[in-house]
Image (cartoon, rainbow, N blue to C red; front, side, top):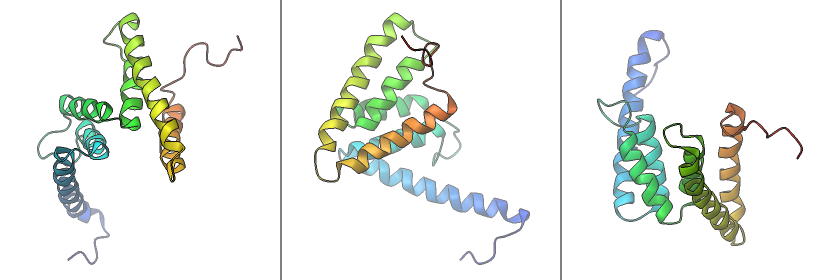
Length: 151
């Protein structure tokens, strides 16, 4: 029972409550992902990438990549967008190797989002992706050298 957690000494209690909630969420996302839900795989990838809900480990990028790839293969446009963006901004691969892979994922993300937009309730999913893009644009993740120039 949480009744009056207000002072700085209660930060540890809030952190424990949050850790239990995130751990529980990760457990149920893992069950849903094992059942084949691509949205759960994308959420699980985000949790592994940020280190949320994992006891004793800060981040697990390999597991995050695995779940993001599985979600993208299942047709989740959010996972496809994340993979395409990651390949465009990756500093570990050469641009020549990364560009075709990034274009593949970005093309499929756009195609899937466009197809789902035409279905009932599709606009809400497109708005989710726009929100993701807006956050990334604010941070400057997608800004290239020639983005502000007119060709």
